[in-house]
Image (tube, rainbow, N blue to C red; front, side):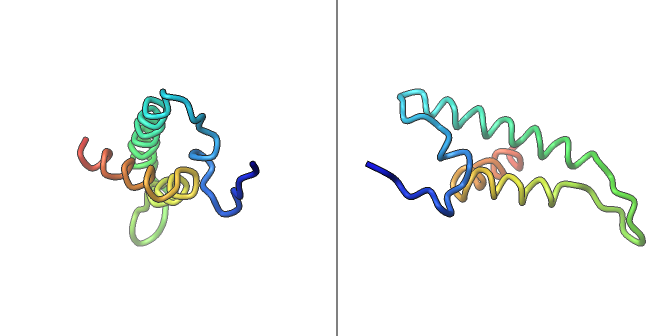
Length: 80
C-alpha cells in the first residue's frame, strides 16, 4: 500500500513504525530544544534592534517536525 507523503513533515515520515517510535520522538524533541537553545545565543548584527536566530530555528523545526512534534518541542523548550 502506498501512502501519500506530499505536504507531510520530514521527521514523522522518516520515523519507523516500531515500538520504539516514542523514544525516537523524545530524542527529536530533545535535539530540537538544543537547537533552540543554541540559536537563542547566536546574535545577528541588525540595526536598531539586535536579533537572534531563534525565529529561524522555530520555523525550521516546524517545517521538519510537523505540527505535533514542533509544538511539543517548543513547549519543552519553554518548560526547560
